Length: 443
Image 1: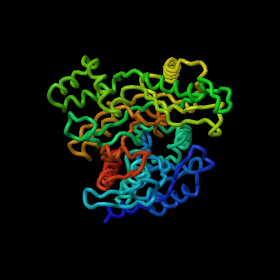
Image 2: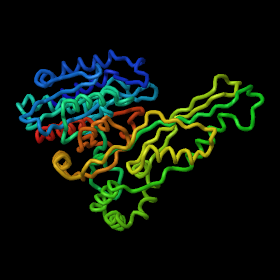
Image 3: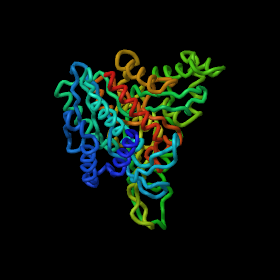
Image 4: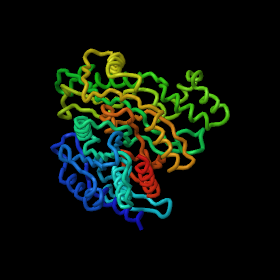
């Protein structure tokens, strides 16, 4: 049975621990080579009939020549994963084990959702369409990055290469939103949220340098206390919430399908937004993140001995910059919130928000119609992607960049992204393959 074979392929590829790390020298690149070798074995037609290139040793490009190359498309995914210490997992993170039966059957493991599931679903769809003799109307590029979880150099290099060759895709589809049914309780139907832009991403380092000494005679304000106070002041001053044009489109779409007073407010968002914004911010962290620049302390460093005062302490603030803001505005807000000249702020890995892709025209209408046909009864709506993806690099060569993962993801599964017990419904994975088959046939 074809579906059983597709599941076996995903199991095998999830079992290869392609963990990318901030320090590339500590990454086990032999696993990445093993992954590429497994793809050759599992997808022979993709490797014999498509043109395959390797970029920066490990990122992959496949070119499927169509009857024309004037309006190509690109399907993106990445095969590196974040680390997965085995402690606390119900199933081993790199075993690709199955559990349950029927519609409740799951596949467990790091990368099932983020993002090997998409890599494998794309290749399964292409392999089956090649077997069926399909020749696409336009060229299709398959681009699989190797370090999306760290620096995204693979995707950037792929774009450099395509740009040199004059390739300008009319449609670029990467990971992002999904099929969800538990974000907006005013709507009964499942929703396909499609990212038309993504927030900027930056790491801010807060550093305090101060004289040390013995812990038995501490001053009133140690470096650690000063840093802690700065963090607390920043935490107490969140970025202002705003409703962008995309956010308004999202709420209006929800309002069309919602009933009662809530539906009325959402349908008339153009003048009810002053009432809606504070309500949405309080409703959930997911909704709040859609409306503002976010800040999160992710790392703390300092100290060299249990009985010595640290002379340098620092914190990393992971900032996701709203599309109606900028890196400069973010720095201004953080500086004013901390309000302490002895806390030094430096920017690491700055990244501005992406351009907003259109919600009209060929690329959007093709994506929308394919989603509606593949997932009957699903409401399609644009939104702003909170996380960073490889697609941000492709905005250099395409206006039609969209972020949508064709899998149903309940909240309990979304919560496993970059966390323990990452898993995916087998039925969702198979639906994703069918989505890519349909999309490819229309390109």
